[in-house]
Length: 147
Image 1 (cartoon, rainbow, N blue to C red):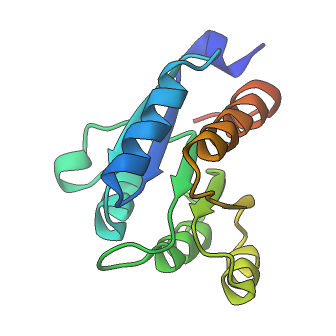
Image 2: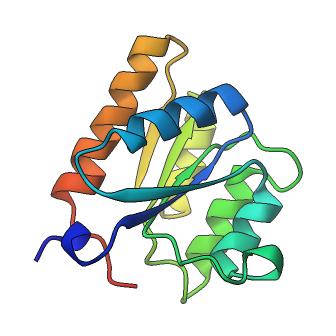
């Protein structure tokens, strides 16, 4: 049975750029698969959201996380490590979507068990294309773990 037939896919977008957040939300809103995008703009809120604490206590567990690395406060590298070290959270697929193409960031992300690492293009059309590719693969083809 298709995952989206049961319920919309819950996506947590962790991105501190309002323009990138708006663009990703727009592309995902037009997706072929029903989804709900929850956006936070820093690492501390990302951890609170996935742990469902504080103001995020009533939020659903995300089915997929799109994570920027360069965040204020707790950065995306730390968020990824914390999620993947937690037995309750590690099954949530995490896709790093960042401007960093640094080999050390790519290496560290995969050592921390990221599911995919995508360098965010700076061009608007290319960014839209990347977001649609994420949708096509992760929301259409991949079977996500049950909540």
